[in-house]
Image (cartoon, rainbow, N blue to C red; front, side, top):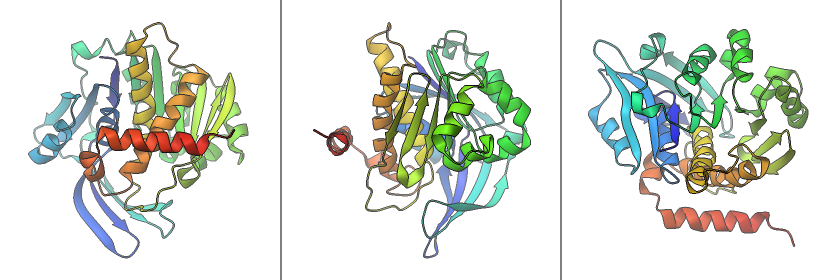
Length: 310
């Protein structure tokens, strides 16, 4: 089994335009990533929750075939990370309404010994020093990619710089790329970040797609033209899951492949874009729970057709 994700499992409260509020729903980077990646390859998660974490939420994650939850650490006396967000009318921006760190303020979870053979590792958003420590737990990795956010760019820049020098790739959104480099142009920002050490940077632009800036080239993909955006939460994590899941599946099929090559990543971005387009169609994991492989394949073919120019 190649793919492992380290990140958060969260209890969310989401408010969307029009006053629709969903309280106490399952969220978190690890949650979305594991569910979405399971459509491509088996995935193992490493995360911690408190004793208040509902058993039905854990069961919901386990319903996705191929998700290994032995790395899920439930802590007696602790509380699960909770987060609230309110989306703007454009559904591309949001305000954080509250954050309760819970277990995130404690020591990170332990990595099961038989997870250490992971070839593909995704470090979902967390403190960069914790992400860097996790790298040492996976000595056999062939590809390690990290996500980050504005909070760490402002508050833990030295640790983030150290992390970036050690990973193969970095995923972040458009505003964070500008914040990190001071450059508005995403290609310029991406090239600047490559100077810090990674082989590639993927800059997410929400409804405008993504840009892959690689040492060997540049690729740009639009977003899949979604008609019904219900809740964008988890879209970025689902994108990363499709990307990394596709890479891991390719590596399983051909161990000699270069998982960080420009061509492999460009193809994998298609899978990430499409799986994310399903996540946003409902709250939490609700759409992914109902998603079939046939639906996913049909949308991948439709997206590839949209991209083709003769």
